[in-house]
Structure formats: C-alpha cells, structure tokens
Length: 116
Image (cartoon, rainbow, N blue to C red; front, side):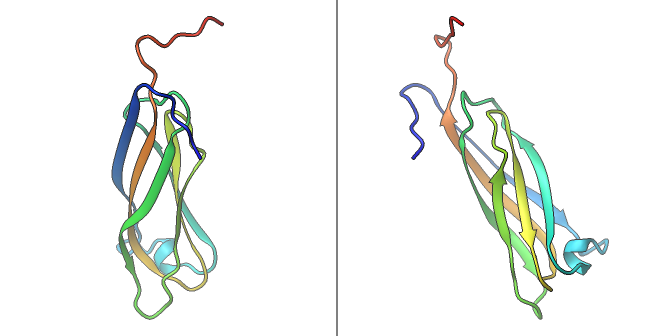
C-alpha cells in the first residue's frame, strides 16, 4: 500500500493515442509474435515521490479474425514522468490503441524544505 502523508495530493490524468498502425502498415497491424510500443509521458507538475499510476485501454481496434491480446502498463515511474507501455503477442493484429491514465501522489508544498 502506498501511503501519502497529509498535505497536498495531486491527481494528473491523460488520454493518449499510443499508435495507429492500420494506415501505414505498422508492425502492430502486420507483425507477428511479441511486439511493444512505449511512450514516455510527463506529468503537468512533478510529484514529491513517484506517484501511483493507473492505466487502461480507452479505445482499441483489433482485427476480428484473430485473438485480441493486449497488456497495458505503466513502467519506470518517476516523480515527473513514466513510460506508457502496450504489448501484444502471437498473431494479434492491432490497428490502433488509445490509453487513459491517472497518477495520484503527494505534491511538495511551499512550506516543505530540506536541511541537508
């Protein structure tokens, strides 16, 4: 469990199209086997510590003949940014994917300071 000390709590969120491979024949649409797309996203304001980041697919477009396989996650979370990662495998064909995310964590306040 992540504990947030009393004080300022920040919530940042976004909704990003991670890729659209159908138009240009990208590997998510035409490829086979393990595939990954990764994008570094920055928060509007830095958190005091790495926040909790939640991600989910908000739009997906898979080919109807093959199995729909997807793994979406947040990795390398820092106080100012994180990696949004989409993975698929096998014969799955993904035309496009949009991912919604939310970060919740402590913010530094005006009265916060460190002696050393």
